[in-house]
Image (tube, rainbow, N blue to C red; front, side):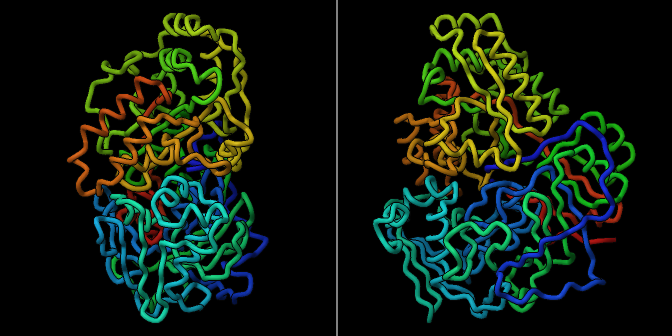
Length: 563
């Protein structure tokens, strides 16, 4: 869900946001395509978010901010239901006439494209566009490719490394629309992988490099235009969508102007006073404004627990000092989760296990069972000091990587202070929100020691957390998601084994996933500090009762409408 910018969180000051959003530097989904004329009378909704997507080019983006847009711009062979709650995690056919047929012991996936599909620039869609789309995701590379594509799709690794000119396991027939994908081994949630916006079809021949302000045309209810890098963009109805009429995928009702502003307090006030309409779900309401919003926005504000989000601190287990388990244990022992929750306006549920509560495999155990102290009680500094002294690493210099926005910066400031309390020599390194995850994802170059991270489910399967984040086989030199460089043979083997089980059969291996999650907690590979709740907050102009808060992508833009 999606990562690499992950949910943006609250600013501290309360400045007003301008009522009008100025959009400049026009760009379209295809630089050579004719842009549909803007209907001056069309309904327009303004959405404010704390940070800009990592990229509006789906071949790169792996963020919540990007995915909520790209999901309705780039439809995959499969996609998700446009529904609230658990129902929204249900897979439905996307550009294929039906969900892929799975054969050959779970290693062959086959489907047929719908007839009459066209991209948002009017170009017809053909089956070979899928092969090209996957090739581009491997070449850029998309951050999830090392977890979901190269280990399983036959020939994907050879293509990604430049040893092959095409992906051997992908065959297409433009005449019939048939697409066949061969896997090297069964991979249970592969249909979910096909639903990623990053694999939503784009035209063959589009540049194999990231096009930040001129992303490719897609097939979906929306198209993106008017991009001002790191500032704003506009999602407008795709003029060709109404003729496509895919069951279960609604048409766009309004245009959506999106502006990024790191002052999330100002964003919240703008929605409260009506100068903006939608507060991005992946941001947080500052505690200083919460009571005012609850009082004045009754009926258009609430918190929603999507059940699939973990906030944690990564610890680089491949290099000193955190390749030492005692040093990692000291961190987890000293971490004060209730204090972190207070910094985050009370929206975090203190925790120690990596898998969040609604994901199969989450240990159904009380917090008192956590191996290094009850997270409800706060950190044990004295014990943490003793563990670090025992490790022989007291006095080691540590750099804590942090975003600049609040409360993320405040979280990492508190964490840095704790590290110094227990005996490290820690300093905080701040990075721009827009580049943070891309920067620390340069694993080969930077080797970051520790810092902020979080994860929102891409699909309801524990392998979505373990594959990209803790499996050593998924480590990439760039756009890496396994920030802690975790490469434990037991974890790798369990991910490979348990990942073969389809989402519909997860209960059969729930205890094995639970055992793995308990193992990770005991090894202290990550320092989990909570599971997050998210705000559903809109202006009085919005038809609040019609809004869809989707469990994978958050806001469903196709549900936006004005009263």
